[in-house]
Length: 275
Image (tube, helix red, strand yellow):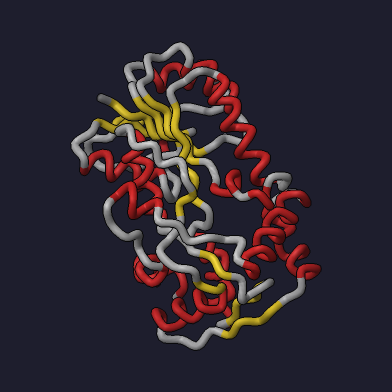
């Protein structure tokens, strides 16, 4: 049985491919341009664009299962193509923000909820995977750590439970095999942003200073990350994380039968990014 991984070059998609192969499954990776694709032996590669239904139909031919990131654009094209394929299951990587009551109106939750609703309304057999805080968000700090030994943070005492992309992929693969892992996914423990920086500093053997910044300054810094509504959604989440608004859940433990990787484990895998 072949699984198509859309977004196979992404930080999570590549782990999905690896873990499918480790499970003895057949994996097909879709990319926008074939010339830039490098995957393990045994992975078939196809060129596809979520905004071009005809390319998706080709990619889906002979496929029974699909993993994809919730596409802000292209959900309708995917549904149109997928409805003509003989699919057993579609696993969509959405966001845990859709399950947070306080986030109901923010741009990030609205976007992911809209994708979920589009796919749900299609009648496709689908399951969501909903991580809340990705550990690799810390890579946004890498440049200033390398160049200045500084991380500038808004609400540095806000506590979250970052999850390793490898664990998200493991839950996604379990969902591809039928496990309904639709609860919020997190890492094993709540850590403040300041504590996360300290873990990185310890791993690289270098002192890293945390400089607290205001929300006003953060808006300026986050301007390149998205439109104004998205920036406000990020700030809302950071603000709420100082008041217990970012939980640590046992979803990974329940669905995989093991603890998720600690943030320190993620840092050990990514130390080179900070040095």
